[in-house]
Image (cartoon, rainbow, N blue to C red; front, side, top):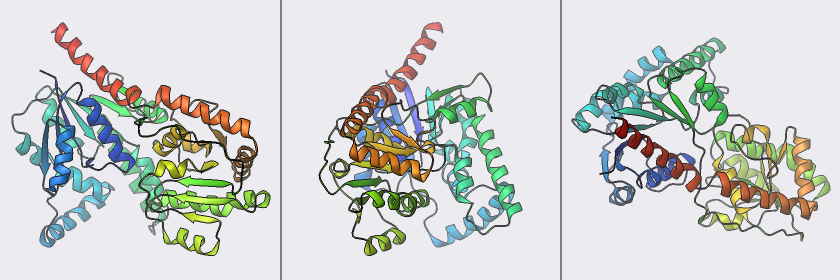
Length: 411
């Protein structure tokens, strides 16, 4: 018998496109080699989704969302207002932790089931941890991100009084750090976050570093240096999120004008889903700006770029899109924030702080075949050594299974 592992996740990985869906998808795929997997999630009962999940798991518990009809939403909306005023937490914290995955609901669904480990995707449902620990089950948190840092970014532009912003930022951080202390083991996907968590929780709790990995059979090395016009500079990522919109606009308004002074015919490609109106309007007024929208084989589009540019701001989290570009081999120019804590080796990416530095790195790569090709090969090598599915998810769950074997021998 394989040891038993329960995943509790509001993220449904049936059709993994976003980074968080891919994280859960690859975790299930790897864990199934070593564990008997039960996956508990929210689902409206779509047969196609359930069939996809059953291919990844041994057992699927698909809870119907409670917030479906207008009357129920109204009742919970009133409860959420009180919850938010008291805690400073977001609506997602309330819906997932207090409603959909509340301790009472999980206890009624799982009843007398036993598991060796329980993995919580995100910390929202931390109040349910004690249900399992009271029966000797170890609980693991896969953080995905330091959410209080993301929360700080989200409320910057909100029309709240300054004192209220400071209050809810402080409360959110306190609640998240308190939640970390509930778990027996924590998975961080960023080394800076890993060290920060270690400074908050008990030294007895293991904090692992598990970066985002990718399937290298899907993300093949495709890039070939092309010194013929037009030069192509790309930005890759979902184009509806605020942080990506801001990064894309920084490229358009601050970095590309410097590049266009030297390379007036260079094209700037926005590669990603659901482009915001602000980006679509820019493309209408400048033929050098190309927007792809959704692309089925995005790897082939990325491979046509001379350089990919990522001026991300915010040092936490993990940019899996960077790893995908590195795998394809397209030279990358990034901000320091974009790769902070990700553990990326030197020599595979050009890094800059200012708009001028980033633009000059791009120009240097467009004109220097030797440098571009060396960066490309180094980046692919780094991904093969450190960010493949085998060297991330598979290695982690293999170690986790061995810990159970060691415990059994000692018992």
